[in-house]
Length: 213
Image 1 (cartoon, one colour):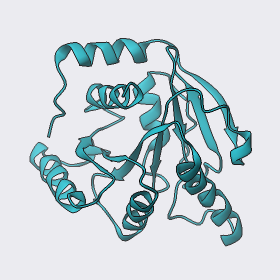
Image 2 (cartoon, helix red, strand yellow):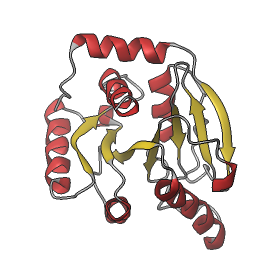
Image 3 (cartoon, helix red, strand yellow):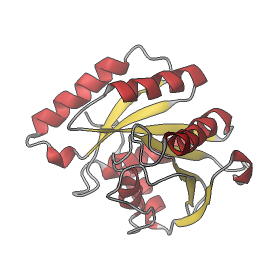
């Protein structure tokens, strides 16, 4: 399902993201965050769902966000500054205990605290592996976002791993149906592949739309 963006909007988003993006800082506590003087969008999802790879694909900067083959490596809120204003936030993943339970709970709670306490947060992009769809651990995240009244949009990652376009379309429709009655869910689902670039222009336009609302 394609987002309703004109060619002009897609081109404006391409130009916006063609300008240099830069890593700002990683924070382990909310009081370390910069002033809430610019709009931010956040990327959340299960560990190893491809958040870092997607941020790199969006910005066109290789290794801007550090991708790891070991799930659960992101333990801070990592912020990236866009050249024309606005920030991207990479949140700690959930659903994988890479360390002891106490450590895991600490960095996952940091992401939740960011979602609840960041007044300039424009939208959360919740990443879901296209091959598996929404799982129980994702439902917990949806419930938390709904309770916090934080607007969120589902982004299906790794769409290239499905063999046919019809499978991707079916997953999009299944996901839309699953979130249709959720109060904070944005009414579009994006399907993407950081590896092939599929859906990346449309997702750039979604991010730009969120940052400029």
